[in-house]
Image (cartoon, rainbow, N blue to C red; front, side):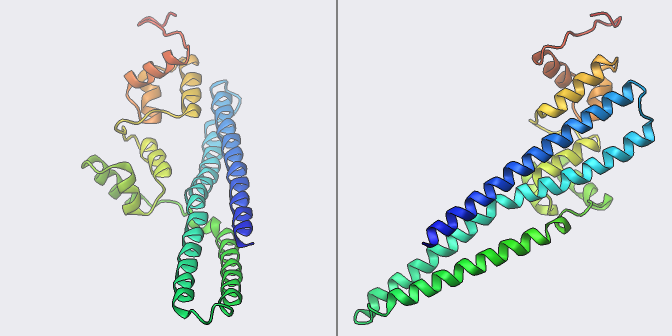
Length: 232
């Protein structure tokens, strides 16, 4: 019975993960359209910046929720396994009390299920507060630790941020990440900038990659490269 409850909780988590992923893809597409509109002189720079800040804040919340969502079900399942193991040992020792053990176990399982549901509801209600805007001091410490040789995940744990969010913040700050490839949405934005006339260096500086990395990814995406005179 309780396993069915856990399966329902897992299904609910998967539904939320799909919804968050769809929202993230929609925001990435919106950001691409804004950049394209700006290069077409359809919207001014100040409006572009304000809209990008809004989208960035929403993406931060979605990324943080996705980072936390994967741990919820696993932690609850581990707690259940430990509880069942404890009561199984007690039943083996009790011997003559075996008739009393099943009702006790059933009560304990029901209590654990209720606590797990309440805990999940509490986390969901307060989730928007778990994605505060990273301070300049925190980003400076993270950049220093990463440049000194720390891995992205280790630095993210050290400063209390999700590693995907830290990766994006460092690249937006001009840090070139080691062994890191642009995402599909970034490649789309790079392509848009390049086809609008931006140089490889300018595109790279915008997204925190070298000009060589930008060129390699654009070629792989089927973009025709311009020569030194700007001709395709």
